Length: 292
Image (cartoon, rainbow, N blue to C red; front, side, top):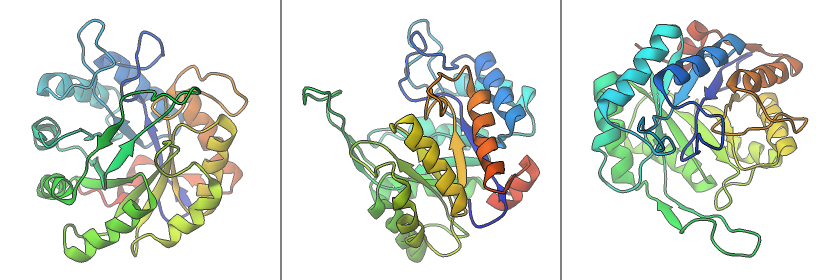
């Protein structure tokens, strides 16, 4: 994130509603810890964590109960104590007790703060909806509730932005006094009803960043070549990068990745190819302004 020569690499080790019976995504505390260690050994300094239901057959569903989340975080920290924890908070509706309770209880280094609303849409080849159209609702009042808890617990917010107007909104949040300090933004690109995963869009988005902002790209739903080209362009423009089984299953040559570590290794290679170095966890903490 930012125009520094040290690049922060994040790994999102498991996805949202991805069925572990069909895809090799981690669910249990041991699996999450092992996936995090694999990503860390390959060069990731940050792990973006979703938490999944531990009941048999329900591993595709999210979990917010303190025991499940606590068991997963404890396993990760025991295996990889140096890793920076970035906790997911995305939830539909206005009952925020689950994610807010986890933020208060565990005080992660960072947490996602979805910065605006989006009609979450996808169609099949025949034009029918791939799932019932859903509103990923993140009005200002909801954003403020998350920010209030993050600020109180010294958690660095990562503003996830699914469209150009949401990127621009973060500047307004700062002007309004909703948060202080240098903002961290993620351009979420590739959702069919959001920003397209196009490298030529990145200079425009960068121009719309708030002052002194750090930024990265989250590429999802893009073809394998376009996805990795997007990461390369992001690095050339001074951004940080993220990969992992939440974002893609495929390597640039079309092979299916065996695990998160293989995806991170591929991304680290691109970091080096553009003449930059991967930030260590301690360097990443300084770059991101983590105060824990």
